[in-house]
Length: 84
Image (cartoon, rainbow, N blue to C red):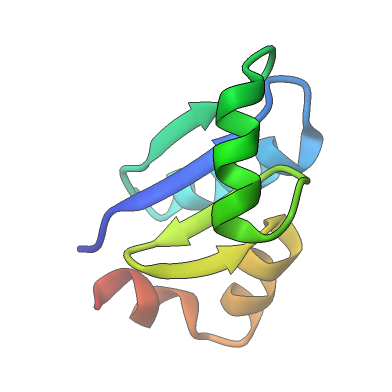
């Protein structure tokens, strides 16, 4: 199973939804909370090309945010990506 990384904020409902979906699939992930840590947010923004949270990577694939993660799930592609 590839490494899953989630950049998030403690006060973000989209972050909570994304983490709930990953938890429901019993996926272990590394959470990097960017609250009050401008250097981590800058790192995330450079890697993702976006400033919003969550930003999610599955292995080397940048999934994007919560809506992108749920779109993969609806399309039936998330499980295959997690199994790669």
